[in-house]
Length: 162
Image 1 (cartoon, one colour):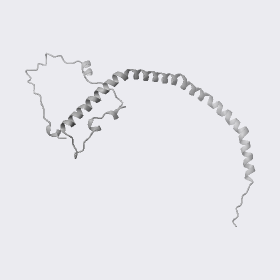
Image 2 (tube, one colour):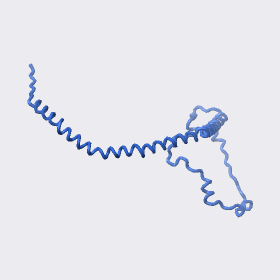
Image 3 (cartoon, rainbow, N blue to C red):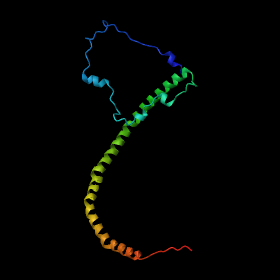
Image 4 (cartoon, rainbow, N blue to C red):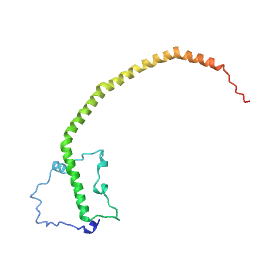
């Protein structure tokens, strides 16, 4: 890329006498916690979206564009990604959050008040249904299967090759 050669080392030197520490109050614990940006993806659900310019556009060492083109395209990529994301979240985040909240509320309500009582009711009824089903199969189906088995057990098949 050619930019590796242009890196400069920048350092800031402050005179201890010019910086009076007693004039500024020490930040409280709440201010320290506000300084850190909150982790909005603590479970890493969208870790696959953490990509930069180099992850999307890469030039092999054998082919390079002009350095200014590379820098401008990198800046345009980052700026457009930032601005379009901010614009889309400004327009879509609140309505989609409302729709998602309503959807999860309806699903939770259905699960709590319809699905689980239905499953519990079925589980209460199943032992009775199982006993009735076993009785019906023992009375009607088992004798028929035993009779058919005895009838077919008397059949012998011999294959002769000529």
